[in-house]
Structures are given as structure tokens and as C-alpha cells.
Length: 118
Image 1: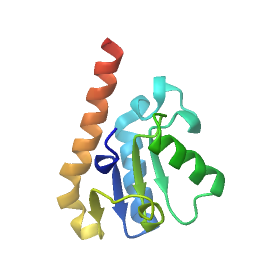
Image 2: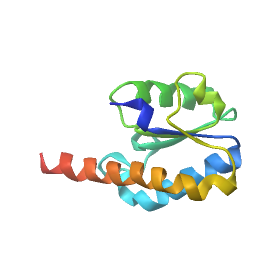
Image 3: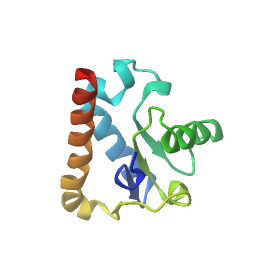
Image 4: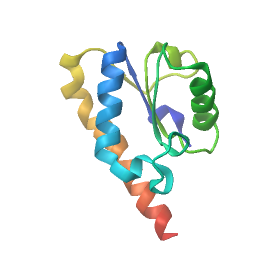
């Protein structure tokens, strides 16, 4: 897994939440491993200062391992652990960021389809 292409850094919690909820909405059942809509099976996560320690530990373990988390939308709280590939600074730059964000979503969908054919 190439973690440098699987996370988005945002300046604010609000922006993290907006992008995370958009990704989960667009991916639908593909936002979860095998369509199981439980937190433990979610492939898109948000990571910020208010994320509980238990959730932070789960997200970090899954993101750096081969578990379910494949996309993390984060504030600098997560950036302390990795070098982000895509920074989203403010709402005015989101239009520029959507193509890269959509590429991550499209690649995730493609990977799900390919893995289900195997």
C-alpha cells in the first residue's frame, strides 16, 4: 500500500468532516469492507485532535497495516505520523482539490471491483 496517495490533509475539522462525509456518501457500500457498515470495516476515516484515543489507535494500526482503512482525511494531528500527499487549505481551494480527491475515490472503486473478480 502506498500511504502517500491515500490521505488528505485539511486545515480545519469542518473541512475534514465535509470531505470525509462526501467520500463516504459517494463510495456508498464500497466505503466499507464487504459492505459491512460497521466502524471496524470502514475504509475511509477522519483523524483530528478530537478523535478518541481508541479510534486513533485503530485508525493508525489499520492504515499502516493491511487492514481496512485505506483513505484518511485528517488535520495536522495525523500528519505528525506521515507526510501527506494532498493538502487542502481552505474551501476556496477545494475546487482545485476535487480532481485529486475524485481520483482517490475512483481508484478505490476500481480496486474493489478488481479484488472481487479475483
